[in-house]
Length: 142
Length: 122
Image (cartoon, rainbow over all chains, first blue to last red; front, side, top):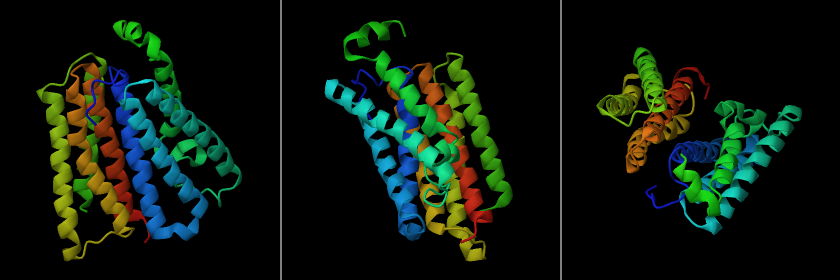
């Protein structure tokens, strides 16, 4: 995780990255367990959970890395998560069989204290604040 | 898992987490007390690891998925050291907040582990 040269891994952003890393671990590890032990119960939900986990890992790495390309990757992964939690959260209300309660995005991330719903919003606010051109000026006022 | 030890561990993790969050938001950098609290959480996790290894031999087995339990426990043991490393790379108030977040996530994971061991049906 060491990459303190990153322009985005500073100040409160490091808390954000820490939470992303924990959520990435939680979502990925859990979906691996689910796929190994009871894949047939809800294949769609568990595969989607695994995808969510991988995207959280991607977002964590993108937030850690410096440069404009990683900035774009961070936006893409975080927006993907936000859409994911909204769409799957809504679907899980109408189709609990397809999306059982124990996936990361079901019921808007209820099983994860709604962190999957809140985190992308904080992530987007942080990225907006750390826009490449104004990053230095913003950080000075931190 | 031992019932009372798990609850004690849960309580310590919650208190350590809140303690670090409060001091962090109050602007404190990590000190002996906050790092000590994280160390205590880690020591209890290692004890829990030993308990979980030994308990099945005495007939104390998880009612739920052993695989799920061990994924939680191993992940939990790794989190505090990783959090301390990440926190101390840049030493400021947010380092202490990171320690708090790590302890609270341990609390959630210990709770889940307790559910799997005592409550969840296989």
